[in-house]
Image 1: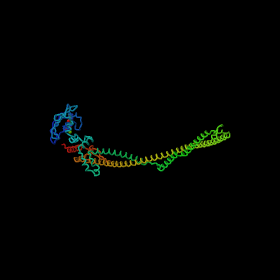
Image 2: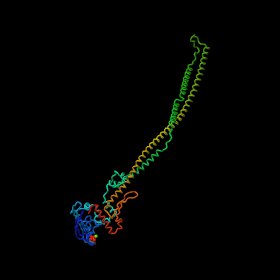
Image 3: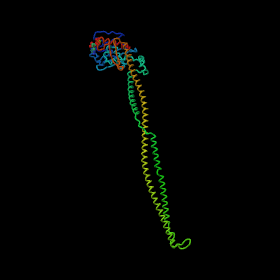
Image 4: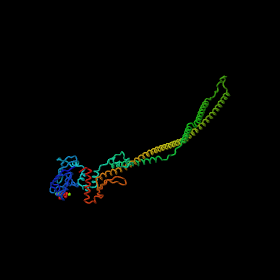
Length: 464
Ligand SMILES: Nc1ncnc2c1ncn2[C@@H]1O[C@H](COP(=O)(O)OP(=O)(O)O)[C@@H](O)[C@H]1O
Ligand SMILES: [Mg+2]
């Protein structure tokens, strides 16, 4: 940008003045004659502030006047000529026009570029009035960012390998991302360690003794044998007895019928069927005796059969009772056996299940171990990456800072600090002249510092 001319009205101590500028200008005059006023007018026209950057500009109006105005004619970077006019009243800005058209400050800013850089180039002591943060921002803004590949070239091979392919612009952002990844990986490692120890614990539980299948088979056999006894047992004996009792009952009935059918063969007065003579009293008496004898004999038989039948029935009853008793005892024994068998089977099933769970836990532990190793390797990789990024940031900062050094002689500007313990880059701001901080400089040293910085800014930004 080339400022061609300036017209002031009621500006500071100047009622009216106009100046024409060439490529190089010498402004001389006694104190209080308006040299600084020219610079202030230019800044006021361009930015609407004082030289020190303040917006409190009502003091710029000539005492006793209502408003001031400044017009500046300049040639822009594209070679076009413009006239910018700013008028300020007592309480507010009245107008801002560019080439006769009303514009706003952002329009003007867009034409002039970074305001701080302009001011630093234009007014040598401007930087000294900035806060450290503002000054740092100014210098960082002047630096060209060094491309990823360029920084990589300057790094040791081990770090270069860790960064290859990452291709980031801002190492601070990249580091923050990797730190997040590290945190996540550490959390995952902790989770896997927990899961692994849990699985190992499950894999080492004690397995209870089982019951040998041989033993279960024997119990089973005993059980089956008892079933057979319960089913067949004394059945044969009972059946034999029952058959005998039934046979005796039949015989008893038969004998009774036989007894009933015993009747006297002849009554007195009956005749002999062969000779036809009336049967005599002897013969009748003899027949009567024979009938009595037969009756006696039958009675004897009936008694015998009855006694025997009764005895057998008693025997059968006792046998059946005994059999019932035996059956109950066998059933108890059977139940005991069944309980033993069931318990043994359950025990073996529980053992099987524990063995299965153990095997599963062993498999899980193996998987967790594998995952853990993978995750730990990834974590290691991330840590190496973070270290490499940190190194990268340091190297990039160095390369950026060295750009400034090329433009400065007695002034040095430090914008980055390397944190010794971590290698991290920390933003700092130190402005030195001959190695001395600004606070200890004399007035002339401060001006010299400002001039050197202004010259550097002009060169770096291509301003004149
Ligand atoms: N608002 C104002 N009204 C009247 N006079 C002013 C006003 N502001 C500054 N002045 C006067 O204008 C002069 C400023 O001159 P300046 O440009 O600083 O001189 P120098 O040539 O020494 O740099 C001083 O005499 C100052 O008193
Ligand atoms: Mg002055």
